Image (cartoon, rainbow, N blue to C red; front, side):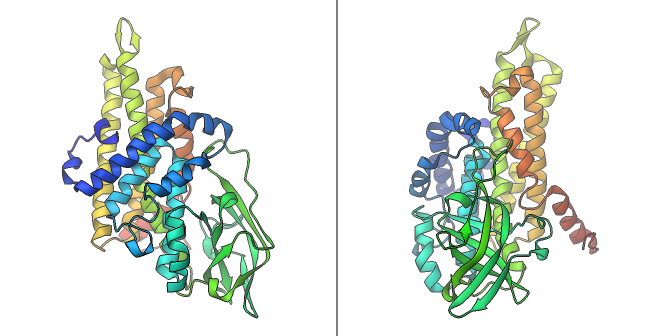
Length: 388
């Protein structure tokens, strides 16, 4: 359980009973049902789809939403702790849950009609249906305003044409939240993936996030009925608000990866004997462990205050950018230090280190690259935009 791995500043004392219960329930699931099988699925390049119903039973999806929409009204800190535990298992598991909650349920809840909420949210919460989110395109990642996907108004609805890339859950999704330009204004559409003209081929050859399902979305004259446009979506700010929810998930989630690689390094250093004593007794190894523990503690404090700000309704997108930027970079640094402590053994899948390190290379890039978050914060601090 992650709270027993490292809680140097007693953040545990700041959590409510419900937050601890949610975290511990998901931690047990990760420890007993996910960690024993993740290396096998990672090597195969597959997601363990048989676990999806269990995730629904655990109440992970949309847990911060009201009960009438399938949530439990949990705090954002509870949700963050859930993401932390899932990513302690693997980034693919957290990505799956993050997309379902932050990028599919959130836009329907925030920008959808009451009918859309009642039609989809409870089914998404229970994992009866799976969703994906289509914004990034082959030529437009950091600059989503340049998207080429178009929606054309026709009798009874819309025709969508375009291509999306790097879509988590795309090939197994029942619905897709697709963002397209309608009369040059970005709008969101709920697309049934069984609709004629819609396809989602799996992207192959990944050396990172191998246990995650990543797809293209190809839309060729895909008909979307009138009632499936998200009525409150209006401009690029709407999908960016969704991305803020996902970035929040990442800021917490990568702490789980940090804890996993730190624990592996700590345990290994105590049992690996060189020069007739454990390498944990050497000053250079202790310096590495101290650095790891310090950065984990800083990340925990950053995420906890971020959750408090979100629960109080005081959060800004720049707050999320800072936490995502810092925590992912430090998680990747910690994974690399952990690999050093493991020596040659660090590249073996007997240990979780190399898997997390490879995953974090992707996490540093998606939901806003490290550089883009740097410029977002830089503009906030100076008042001067350094990008177009």
